[in-house]
Image (cartoon, rainbow, N blue to C red; front, side):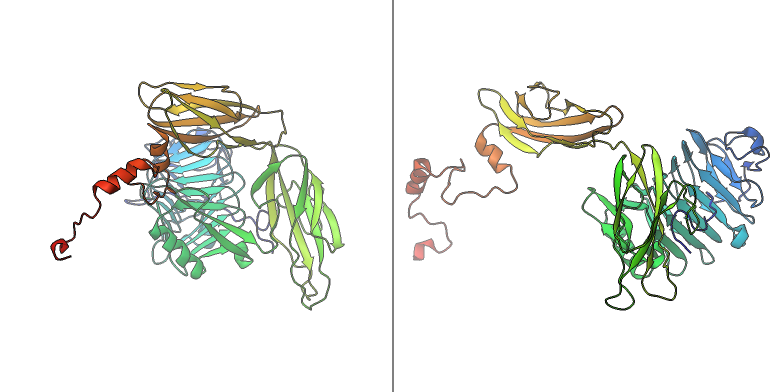
Length: 487
């Protein structure tokens, strides 16, 4: 069975609940259609931020969040009955707890499912996936989950088992008390195209490391490697999975529309020296069958290749798979279904290196050396420099505020933060640079982390000269040791 965006799609639902009885203020019944926004689908109208929304019946249509600004005080998905909630667009904000599969009876067909495949789910308090029962949460495509306070519990109580499947999108556990609680044998987190981020603390890093060791965190159901990055995003731990085929474009990523080269690494054969062959499928259907379909045809058949060029269109998500022949009785070995989005990419802006400068005749002139990288899909980008912050009673004058490389004149002491924005007609990228202005070049040099005083610079003016010699002469043969009189 394939893993990823097409195999058997795990039904999902959102649950939020704890503290008190799970008697829902308004219950989903799906009488008319699948849309959250239709009041006729609810027992007591569309939920608001003072009501609990409850999804407890596996036989009614799934509920789909379809607009910006959906809200509930609490959400319970599954409570002595299953239920499915999908966030596909817009946003849903839950001000209190969110629970998937509250009761011990919520297993199998009665399990609760929450699926975030687009839009944003904001959890302002605790999120439990499999509280006492069996709960599933899937993040896929461009879905975003933000948890702002308290912990995310996966398989929370003694009878609970939780499954967090990150097939795409991103789940963020933000600062303010949001932590991850997992237990070996009760929790499963699988990375197959999605990303999890946490605040970079020693406690969070220890939790992640132990979860990988215990097999709680896996990549592609064990067919890949979990990668933990603590350096690329300041203050954050970023966790992803890489499949052993090492797909490019990155699974779940984005590329510039047009010609795209699909690349992969062929596995080792069962017998050394044997040739490994591949079948490759590519298209827009996330659920294509073996052998291809109209939307996901087979583009390579039984060839020993590791790349192919395809044509893509903007604003479309593409799916592809590589099945390999390694000389096994089980050939072909089915690979997962990878995905990427073709689009106009956001310009990448580097505003340059932070700098130290000094006043000369009452002003500091600083050269700004920025770099913008853009795919040029729409049209040439434009740039603009602006001031984010500056000391009081000072002025900032750009030589040319619409040029990447320009000069800026600063007329006072202190710290200046400048921002460069690049706009390509659709998306804006930005970055900042900080400039600290000092009285003179010596103060500026001494502010740098790499500054090392010169031996002999007694007066600390960044020079060794006659002034230092005079100081040395004035104190020649002086002693301030405790035994000076005995010398």
